Length: 98
Image: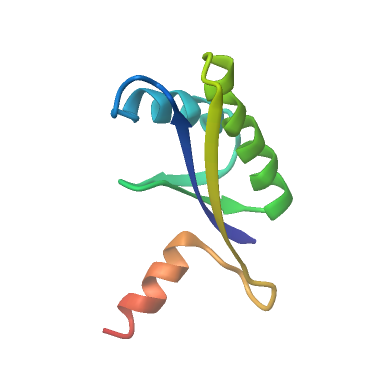
């Protein structure tokens, strides 16, 4: 199981606001069965790495379908193979050490 943070930034939109584009990209992710959390700076997705990357690829295409000519997608992957990894588990591990 992997926990992945993704940020998809369309360039050249003519406006500094990204919320419309983020909402459109999230519509694609909602079609998946993946667990995710929208944060102020990106979206965190939990699941099988191959499945997560498949959906990120679909998400990356959304701004292009809306006429955007350039998209920058940043992906950060935490893929732990020795035990299960979840969004909640990562947060609890830190909170338990406070």
